[in-house]
Image 1: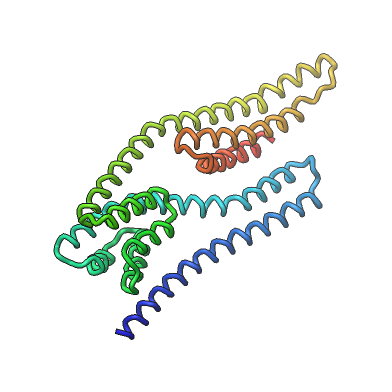
Image 2 (image 1 turned 120 degrees about the vertical axis):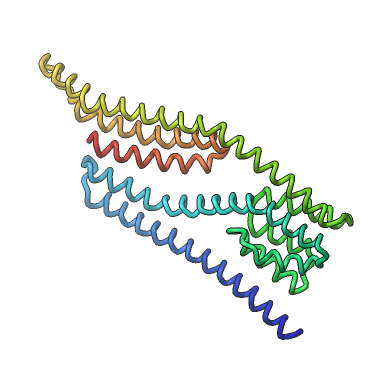
Length: 290
């Protein structure tokens, strides 16, 4: 019995160590890219003329270098949580079926921990290890909900624990919560399909704005300048307009992306993802019109 306990504790330490290693890797990538971005920005201000096209490109590249890793890890985490929320009802139903077959709760969890639940699998294995070490089921489930960090999983785990502590049949509780979770996921997918059209409309409007800017800067204003020059007016439209419209594009890309994210996903943070996409499109456009 004692060797088994040591083996379980060792397995738990390995899982904790792997999780810590992933977190340290993420922090090191964000820190290193931020340092490189700061150095690039300092060199840009120190060595490149402020009026040159290279100054603008290097400044924006430094900003993107600093924020892209942050957005990458943040949205990677969001995708993982969404996949976990999709797999969680399946896990609950498998656990209920195993318990209904006559197994004890720890044995049922140990059985389903061998199933593939995508990114949820590692959390199920860790919960199984905690039960083997003597953790109560409600504490292990609560710990898993906190570890995942999803508000939906936390609410479902809390509902299961409350019903379990009240003395209900755990199989019926798991089935009921799984059915509720399926309904929540179904409603979320319906909402996403509805707002997808709004998101596409936002991108189309922004692309139309970009086309208008390119036509104005590349064709209309040079023609206007030549017309003004014939009237002996010293107005350099061709030089001032591209810079003004470049600033407009950058500002529009940031706020249009946030608006798209709020409409499509109901979150300002999600809007930053769209802002980054639109900002990249704007940078390519600026390189064209300069």
